[in-house]
Amino acid sequence: MTRPMNIVILTGSGISAESGIPTFRTSGATTFWDYIDSGGVRRSHPVEEVCTPEAFARDPALVQHFYDQRRAALAAAEPNAAHHALARLDSAWAGELLIVTQNVDDLHERAGATRLLHMHGALRSAWCLACDGRSAWDGPLEQGPSCPACGAAGALRPDIVWFGEIPYGMERIDRALERADLFVSIGTSGAVYPAAGFVRTARYHGAATLELNLEPSGGSIFFDETRLGPAGQLVPEWVDALLG
Ligand code: NAD
Image (cartoon, rainbow, N blue to C red; front, top):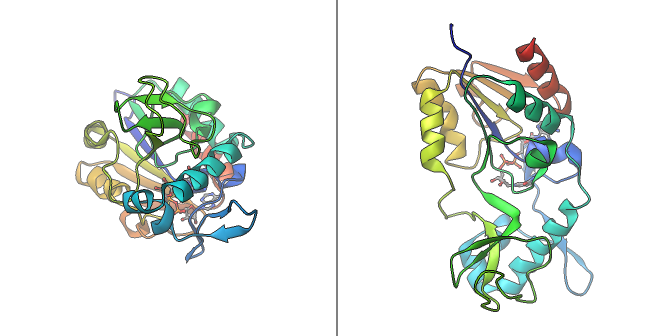
């Protein structure tokens, strides 16, 4: 090949597991995120009770509280070797490259990645339902603070794409998948669509496909190669080999 490969990398919660951020699923079990309720009791919730627009309409305080805790926990987490390796690849790679993350944490950007798309939104962003603006947001939303852009009180929601909502950046992702020579999936269970279908789109357009995951995922059969192990080990090894 006379030009450098075009690469699309899809990451899921498994890449952040070694940074101490819980995944939804490991070893076939769906472990629901738990949270501390206002009385200080630890509780767990099916994702449908905290990660859907219906849940937010039904009980906004519960959903805001859940995401306030996730946002606060993120402040204590640090990027791991896998995030750093991808940031290194991003800055060194001469070909087209796009890191599409399903994660709502900010560990890719804190490691230095720039060619990055948060298809499911971001914990450190608030979306105002009054003015439709997005604002960087580090604190809690449960008490209904005012929007920094328009001043409306109580109109901010987490800037998270919930189940049933349309992911961000799909046109850009589709264009990148059509042009990809290599598609790499890291730390994702292959259970959440449309991300779970990216491997088939990339294959259809002629890309080679590689999966790096702790265990075979729901979509493993669609990959040319699957390497099993922790992302903190597999991703730096893969990046080092690619950069020679
Ligand atoms: P998932 O929880 O469904 O699957 C995680 C996958 O990562 C599993 O296949 C598991 O075997 C693998 N894994 C676990 N530890 C790993 C490690 N150390 N190295 C490599 N792989 C490891 O996650 P998903 O596929 O990303 O989909 C769930 C949805 O949950 C996504 O939409 C995402 O937005 C959301 N989510 C995000 C975060 C986050 O932002 N960090 C955390 C949990 C869930």
